[in-house]
Length: 555
Image (tube, rainbow, N blue to C red; front, side, top):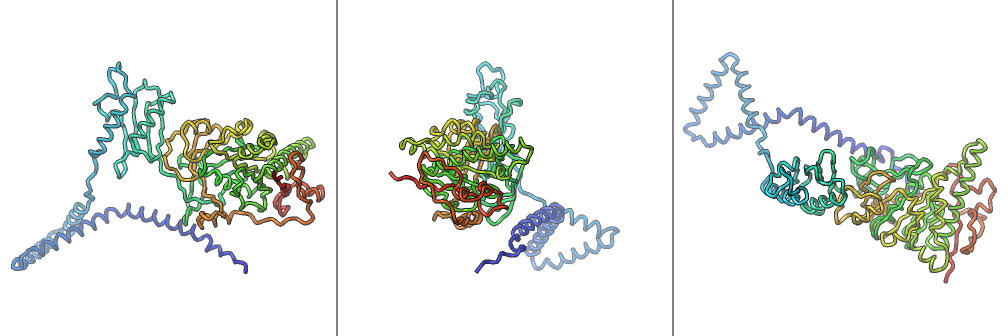
């Protein structure tokens, strides 16, 4: 029995509830600010009433009668005096406001433990920020740390969360190694286990160190609000980008700053390289990219490990092939190279004749390769060509043909990547634990932060071309067929998967898988009319043209 969809009022109820909560919080904060004097006077009246009750309880019984007579006489005198009740009311309100004021002691400076931490940090910086010939040193043993530390903040545990350091002009702040020594010293003295951001102001001779909050790890795979040609790699700090997208994190909806990668004919970084270690989340990143790419294009996946991480995508609409063997990878990549050339020729002929570019050349084609170096070793042992050699045409001419290449590799086998892959993948992502040297070698620039030693899966850095290095948290996109996957994440991934396409009748038999055989067009295209040979837009066809099926040779 088919399940009926929920009414719109129920499916979108969480957004209305979240918006109502925000409005209620804002109204409560505004009401608190407006009614603050009334709240203070009410608190003072409560304190005065309590003091009166305690005074009455402490009064002996034989004196309570004269006390009541005295109070009554005083009230009568006040009532008979001109403007007496008004003056009495004003006096009572003034006393109540004074009694109800906030009496919490205000901190005028750091505590003794915080002072000791600042002094020790100042003494540790003396060898780096001082010279023997300086007549008036800013940093000196036993000197005044207040002149060097302009601003400082501590958390509830007494650990530094923000520090502004003024250093002398002769410090070589343009030298990378000198800056790294200062950053590591501040990181060690301020407390490990947190991620720090260092902002150097060479013009003003100031260094600002601040503790970054952890990036959210509860954002799972979902349909992000992006334009065609935009892919959300993950999420970063709020001040690092100028854009936010609505996301669902658990049961709440909020806005998060994304790292958006733009592909297509006008992209300056049309191809991407993701590097990490085992368990760092590179496979989840490729799976997230595949789910977003299937909304507007077709995908070819080459899995070098052959562990079945992309089994959930096999046979889905828009997924042309999921290859796990060497023969299938060679055939699929050769077809992709021929398809890139065909698109270029078709677009060039259309422009020369003054016609519009064919629609089948505009549909994006994605080539996702997970650890191609594993297939390179197998190809070298078998005497067959490296699959990376077939990526030269898609990498060099993919931007003009709407072909995007994404390669994921591990640090241990990074040297096995070809020069062509390294040169044309200018969008870079590094996930997992990595040293500053490794980050700089992959990203081309060092990050401005010192990463924490223990980081979750999918945490790392991203750099798009010559842009800044951004912190990155990849949305949780695990394998839905893995038993260790939570139910919430499994449902999130399964909801994004396209339907499985139905095989067409009368298709040609599978290829033999000979290494030197030319893959040519898909087998269904060989049995159809010329108008049906090339892929058409999704609204004009039921399923994309499948890749040739290759049976790998045994032995």
